[in-house]
Every structure is written in structure tokens, then in C-alpha cells.
Length: 400
Image 1: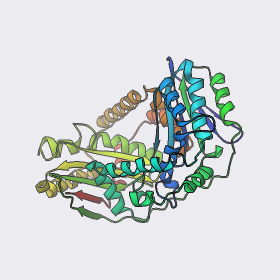
Image 2 (image 1 turned 90 degrees about the vertical axis):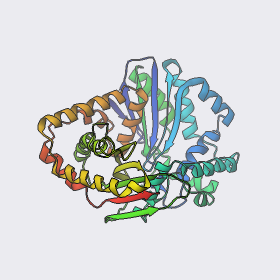
Image 3 (image 1 turned 120 degrees about the vertical axis):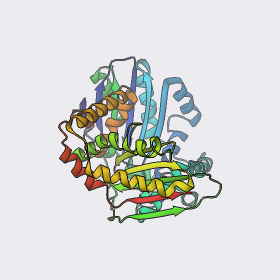
């Protein structure tokens, strides 16, 4: 992978990938974490960028998106916002110019503002209809007070009512600057050709002074929260552990460990809770390692009468994990599984473009996407130390 930094600070990442299509991502550290107030503003801005630019109307933008892209999207997360898509190689220049126009030259006028905010409010309402997501949202709300993390990314309806077009313009002015932009392109097109297209679009934008919001997390104690919801038959359980202080290597070790602990049908959690006891249709754990939402989380659905037994088994699995009865051969098998899984995911050029851009924003090293597969020689003791560092002070959310 090649990295080229424009004079104004825009970072350009290039990854050669044989093929007839090109994928690209324009990424900024301008997600929900950056909202000190005006909750939901980052996501609302993402929507408003597609309402029209200085050169194109919303209708023309939509027509061009369908014409040029096999796939395109935008997403706001806690730490970042990304704009991304895949074109044929022959349409890359026009497609990238279109996205550059959307991101760099939005009109951000009153046309469609009220209508778009109404769309987002409806999205916020429907967000809660996904009970698994709602259980996680309640866990974050109850367990992480005084953090942006306690409110959903897109904002609740009450918060969205307060957002004005002025707020959106101010957010754009503060964070959509050269010094906060990463462009990642995965393609078989020549590097110099692609670089020139990037330069033509981004070389003249304002470098800016980047003042990112400092994320402060209080040390958490073990807590259990129970919310009763009318109209649901079963129960949702989420158990989370704070992993904000892990190094990159420790985070990698935790991902390897999770393949044994809670990812897949042979995992410890699945075996103990579903295979042996039949208490849940689906149970899993995952590593959320991004800035501002650094958690190791266990999720499952069960019957209301099986909540206590399910929690007891989770605790038993955690104690087994802390003792870690794996051997060196098991570790090598887990590393092999991790590398295969990651390699399969990275076969998709859009995944490469997205992840390299995100890793560049989060760690200042987009190439770590590939380096992560080169990590080696995790020992039993090293993994045991990480596991015992992580699996303490659980925050538990029960939705029933």
C-alpha cells in the first residue's frame, strides 16, 4: 500500500488490486464523538450533503449515483463518517469527482432541510424497533453516563428537534477540513493517474486547525440494569467490558481469543448456552475496538424465565476463560482462523478501502489492516493476561 500526504494535510492511501472496478472511501474523524452539543448533528450533516452541491441538484446527484456506481453509501459512526462506493474503472474519475463535489461543495441551504430532518426522526423511532440494537443502546445509556456514547449515533427525536441548519453548517466548517480527511482507493488503475485525480479535487481545500473532542471515560463498576418493555415475548441480554486501555497488540489478542470464546458454533459460549442447554437461538461475543466505543460485548436472546440461568452460565464461561485451558496448538489454529476470516473479508475492494481509511484515522496507519494478519507468536500467558485485564467490572443490560 502507498501513502501520499497532500501539502494541505489530506492523506491519500492507494492499494493496488487487480480487477475491472475501483472502490474508494472519503473518511473524516467527524462522527458522533465530535458532538459536544447538538446531538445527532454529525449524522444529519451526512444526510444534508446529498441534498445538493454548488454544481449539482439533489435530483442530478441521485441520477449520477445510479448511473456510475455499482454500490455506494455513507455512514456515521461514533468516531468517524465515511462516504464510499465502487465504480467501473472507466467511470472512476467521474464517480470520484461526483463524491468530491458532494463532500467539498455542499449548498447546505434550507431546501429540503425540514423534510430530511423528518426522515431522520423516523429513522430514530425505527431504530428502537430492533430489540437487539435497543438493548445495546440501553446498556450504553445506563452504563456510560456523561459520555456521547450514552445516546444513539443519530440522536433521539427530542435532540433532533433542536438541530438547526446553522448547527450543521458550523459542524461542517469545524471538521470537514483537509487536516481531518483520509482518502483510500483500491484499484488496478495506475497510481499516478489516481493521485492526479485526488489532487485535482482536494489540493485547494483549507487545511484548517483540527480540534478533536477529548474522550473521557470514567472507571466503571459492575452494574446491572433491567428495563421492562411491553409487548415482547422473550428477553435480550447484553454484557459489556471496557477495553479502552488495550494496546493494538492486546486488541489483536482479544480478537483471537474471541474466536474461541464467543464467535462461531464451536465457541465456548455457543456450546455451553445453546448446544448443551438450549437456552438461546443465538449467542455471541464481539470486539468493538473503535475510538469512543471500546467494548467487549456478549449478546444473547432467551426466554424471560431463563435469564438468571443464562447469566450464571455466562459467568461460568468467563471464569473458564480467565483460567484459559488452551494449548499452543489451539492458539495456532485460532491465529490461522483469524487470518483466513480477515483475508476473505478483504477480498472485497470496498472493505479494503473502508478499513484502511478508518485505520488511518484511528491509528494513523492504514496499512495496519494488513499488518494485523502478520501478528504472530501469541502465548498462552500473554492471552491470559489480556483476558484477565478485560473480563472485569461487567455492565449488564437486561431487556424483558
